Length: 176
Image (cartoon, rainbow, N blue to C red; front, side, top):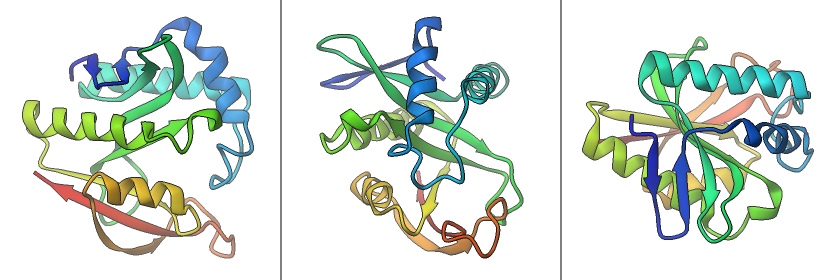
C-alpha cells in the first residue's frame, strides 16, 4: 500500500520515531480510550507501533500516521488492519481510526478514512472492508456512516467479557 496519501487538510504517511511519544500519550488518554477495555501504557503503545510497522511489511497495508498539513502536527492514525480474532467476518480487513481528543469534531476522521477507502478501491485488490465499535461509541459509528459504510448487525466482541458494558458491538462493511 502506498505510504503517502493527501487530502485537502491531511497527510496520511509512514510513521516517524518522533510520533511515538504523542502516540503513547494519545493511547493513555481516558477520553480517547473511553470505549476500550483499558488505556495503553507506553510499553503497550510501543508494541502496538511495532505491530503497525510489521503489518505494513507483511501485508502491504496498515495504519497510517495522520498529520495536519497546515502545521505538520501528528494527530493519530487511520488505515487498514487485519482482523485476527475469532469472529465470522475474519479473516477480513478492518478500516479504523484513532485521533487525539483535541482533533475530534472537526471532520478529520471521515476525511482520513475516505482517503483510505478511495485508495483501497482504486489501487488494491481488496473487495470488502469492515469496521466495528462498541454500541456505546456513537461518534465512531457516525464516522462509519459518513464514509458510506453499511450497518450489518450487532455482535458480542469475543475479546470483551460478556458482562462488560463494552461487549456488544456494531459491525459495518463496504464492498468495492
